[in-house]
Image (cartoon, rainbow, N blue to C red):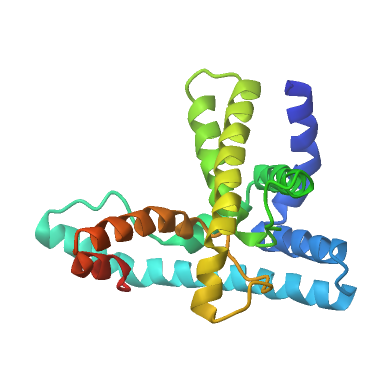
Length: 230
């Protein structure tokens, strides 16, 4: 297993050294070509995403620089120590795509999705490549924790992969379950290909069950508060 990991590191290191924007440019371009997109359009999409990631990183850097003095004064005047900064999803996505293991998790989930389609366990083809980072960061955190607590790299990679596959299968199945809801919201026919594998929607089945319970006991006003936008 260590030999395989060493080979993977040697293969991905030159790509990883180019940075997350270039990695995304290459990955998106290649995947688009695999789905029959013309090279010019595939390259255009990859370049746009690379520019977006670069812009996100630049804006985060500017915001950190602009607010650092104010935060320092806040700590000085209030005595409150801010040890953790909520930077939102964008930097996390950039960091996650900066890891070569994200490409590995992407390949694993593509294989899992294809197997589920072949075995008719799902009707969803997940083409939301960028949001694989939702699963990847889960795997990366598990692997990081295991590697730093005496677990062998082989075992940590196996456990991380298992967790990614488990959550990935759940979100694909959830996208099948949410398909009628999207059809209703968009006033679209059942033949519409629209659905979503976004992780946020994994809360929807829970909310739908709670809605049924609240409706049964005439607690509709509580149901409304659960569906109001934040």
